[in-house]
Image 1 (cartoon, rainbow, N blue to C red):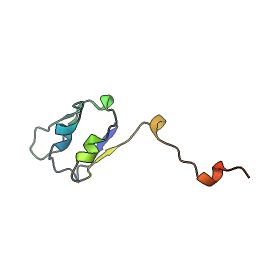
Image 2: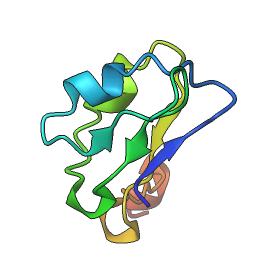
Image 3: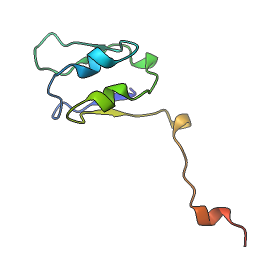
Length: 79
């Protein structure tokens, strides 16, 4: 699941539902509850949902193949 919503932080504002460019989210049937991630496999990892969340309740987890691997700059220099 690429999109993780922290239920403790989510206030149910539905900004993620309104702003997702590909409509991955559906509003919950209960008012104030976290939205439903209806189509997680369609996520583009654009980050709009996380940027629009006023409580930082949304975290994106990129697939392993898309995660950057950082190498210390000093290890790139040959001696």
